[in-house]
Length: 335
Image (cartoon, rainbow, N blue to C red):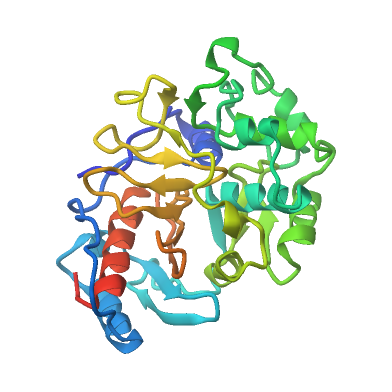
């Protein structure tokens, strides 16, 4: 089943720029994974790791179509299991492979704002961070621009009054929010440096375009360091996971205009991250899928993190494989 659909596709350079801004991707990756059942007896970490490893390495599930990728799962203290599967161009993807993370940038930006606000988001913050601000005309940024220069380009700074209060996934909301909150003069390097003042200097981060919503680049090792901080309470976003979530599927929700998620699934969107709570196949994980396949998550119990790091024009297999890994970890059974 296709987990993501083609989202506002444009040719050539605009395609990559828009995908980075909006996190959309085409294609699918395997079949739906049923929700994780309750278990009276939790498996050991050793059993979990063996099941997740076998699932990641399988040639007969959705993870096969996600190759090459690096995966990792762990808790607030440390990584518990990981591996590099397959090769691309003769090279494996590892924890230290730097790559564009596209819309996985959104979780970082929202977490930065949560720190600036000492954990108490304003009503305006929430409207911008869950994409109901009406700034839904975003197209692209150029690498050498500042946040403000990008916002001034084309119709990026045009607000649609009819879209205010309705979910419409895209980069314009965070672009405008950043400009309104003193970040407008920052270029790529300065934007990355500013986010790290709140997220921590130990989280390496760069921007390839001055887009808080989609221009970030980092490694799996650095992003998982961020996820451990959420689980451990070192960053306030940990307490905000799933908060102020809004419905996102236009076919099932009158308050939704556009989503990159396939219409066969209905997720919610919190502040800078998804809640994968589709009533049929969702497992409740919190996540931030990037257009090129970088897929970080925290499980519904808020005790385990994971990441599937890959670079592809098709992000869908990341979600399908990630669901299998979460289920394998929770049950101790290979998927």
